[in-house]
Amino acid sequence: MSGGYEDDEDLGYESVYTGAGGSDPNTRLQVADQTWTAAGNAGLLKSMDLGLPVRDIRGHTHKSPYSPKTGYTYSGLYNVVDAWEEVGQSGFKICRFMLIYIGTGKIVSNQSEVDISIGQAEVRRVGTSILRLVRDTNVAVEIKKLYHNQCQVCSTAVPTKNGTYSEAAHIKPLDRPHEGADHTSNNILCLCPNHHIMFDRGSFSIADNFTLLGCVAGKLLINRRHTIDIENFQYHRKCHGFN
Image (cartoon, rainbow, N blue to C red; front, top):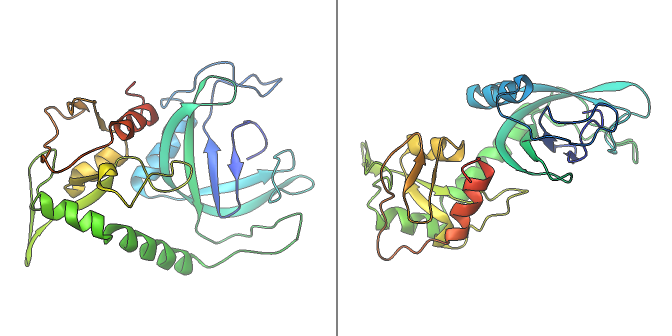
């Protein structure tokens, strides 16, 4: 991170990183759309899919309190946990990546010179706690009950020793910068684990009429008591290039 992209957001523990391509080397402004097939972007997608961390280096030209005053500094390892596309400040499509700090380095703010580095194990425990809290909300439980744990895409209910299993998938993601809702059923789907991860990673999306788009065919199963906010589908399609 060296100030090459105007849309970067650096909060230390997490960063919203702008992918590679489409920028003018002289002005550093976007002059063309970015693509997922560009080598750097494709590499980050592969790191996300394989669960492999990436090394973060901050340069002094990067406008962030966590960047060095001179030269470059190694800031440690980050996991790539999300990827989407949006229109950047210059009006062109950019590829965006959410990076979460997992330790093994030092994050220092030039404003306070405080080391806020924490251990990898601690970060993982916090992350797991958050995921369980989201999955076990009353709204998520009710949606899964409504569908009897049957996936709304493939109608599969994964068998377990104690019954069946499904997952509550948020159409518009909860975390920053998406800020999707978790308190209402109109942003939640009941999916099997396979279609959950495929939906989150943008392998397929859903049209306003519930037709499946992308690498799966058919139509989303909808219970008449399940009302979905169509704007959430529109947001998902925009993030993953289906519009």
